[in-house]
Amino acid sequence: MTESAPSNAGKPKLRSRAWFDNPDNPDMTALYLERYLNYGLTLDELQSGMPIIGIAQTGSDLSPCNRHHLVLAQRLREGIRQAGGIAIEFPVHPIQETGKRPTAGLDRNLAYLGLVELLHGYPIDGVVLTIGCDKTTPACLMAAATVNIPAIALSVGPMLNGWHNGERTGSGTIVWKARQMLAAGEIDQRKFIELVASSAPSTGYCNTMGTATTMNSLAEVLGMQLPGSAAIPAPYRERQQVAYETGKRIVEMVHEDQKPSDIMTREAFLNAIVVNSAIGGSTNAPIHLAAIARHIGVELELQDWQTHGHKVPLLVNLQPAGEYLGEDYHHAGGVPAVVNELMKQGLIHEGAMTANGKTIGDNCRDAEIKLPDVIRPFDKPLKTDAGFLVLRGNLFDNAIMKTSVISAEFRDRYLSNPDDPEAFEGKAVVFDGPEDYHARIDDPALGIDAHTLLFMRGAGPVGYPGAAEVVNMRPPAYLIKQGITALPCIGDGRQSGTSGSPSILNASPEAAAGGTIALLRTGDRVRIDLRKGTANILVSDAELAARRQALDAAGGYQYPASQTPWQEIQRGMVGQLGDGAVLEPAVKYQRVAQT
Ligand code: FES
Ligand code: MG
Image (tube, rainbow, N blue to C red; front, side, top):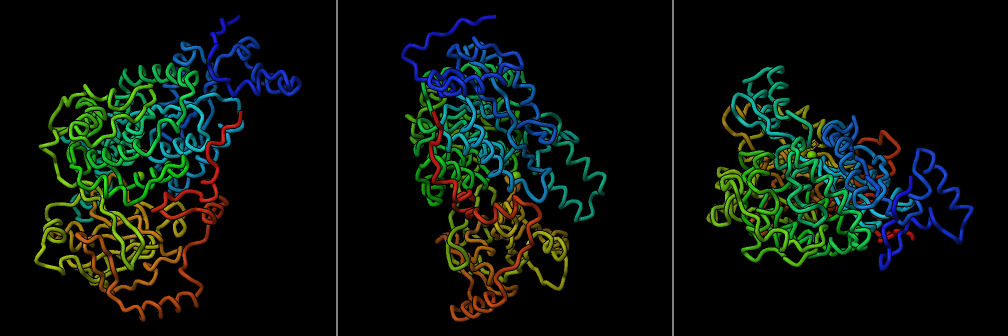
């Protein structure tokens, strides 16, 4: 029953020794040990110098996107044991993007808090972060950033491609399309469900370039996953194989004392920004990367997204910006092929270190594009200048716009007409939260026409706890029937990464935090100048001051009461979307691993 203890000569002291093998504290050592012996681990194992490797398990029946991690954990354990480690698996607060009410946005910071506490307080030398569904990836990376013990991420992988009548149906993207068809009377409720379900044919996360594929791709670019692993579909055999390799590698990382702070440097974040443009990544990425960067203490400004990302072309032809899905992305070469294509243009910091102990440059230099219609060569992009624009003005301090999803029609009307300075000016119609929008969008009395700008407020981290993905609003049904399928949408909430809507979102500060957007009234004229990056209400300062006074006298911007303790607690300490919507008091706790 004894294990041969690996030689630890020259290796860093394991932090788990403070629990399991501490000659200075024999009675506590006995206590710490006994309950880890009670399910069959032996004293020899626990005192042999084998690293204790946590498997931070995000999969469960509650979170179907990540549920396959329950299966992959077996191969992780085999890899960990093979390399001389002891696996200890524990649950992370589950998050399911589509199943959680009112929004999974609430749960990212809760899962983060819980995981920090586990990694800090238990005898764990290194951890495998099982990432996947939208918020699970940033929650895990944020916690690893705060604690800063050796950590590696394992993606669960996307679902297989969805199909319906011979056409690819992609997660989320098919929902926006089916909603329009339903609103136009082209399909009934039953067909609506059938269409949506066709996009989810297997275990795994969303198969479009939504927030999940984006964040899993960026976790690889940041260096936190083994190269080439992010895009492998969940059911493929390679997914099991990379789980095994990931398990082996984390044990080596512990022996090498390779920490998240050695990997997630500013260069790594700038690489992620560049790749995000090339993949057509989600507008949730700036929020999550800001959060990870702040918890690890890396300087990253919202402006970096425009400075380093805007000019980068869109290369990856995945829905919602393009036509393909996750399996195609993998077969085309996945993240390394995209990185290599950008590297050839000098757009990647090649020296950034990654979890396999090599630089991103060394990992990706030979990666080739295998399906050039899915991952386009740099000189044949789907779109040029595909990154985010950062907007400012008297409406908000900052907001972003994803330009890769702007249709040609929208570009012509609002962006590319230098002779018409009024091109993106119109009447505001304002909704206070998603319920208000659903109740009134089809009301003809609002007078919404082709020149209206739709505003959504009360949807930020405080106003709609966690920030709702509701800024992308469809026009009223009567306009859709006339062929106008998109209007400019602006709001203080988020937008689903699977939406192709040309929105200005994440506006900070939100209405509920005193932002000017709270003063806007239906009928006001608003002017957006995308070329200058400005967004302003065309209302006098005196009028705005009077409105501010009236709003303050009425007790400020009103929003619904909290429904749960966590909603109230988070509202009391959450920051704005432009700053990552983190728990602000948590930021000062950095590199907190105790030894
Ligand atoms: Fe989980 Fe999209 S709903 S990844
Ligand atoms: Mg989402």
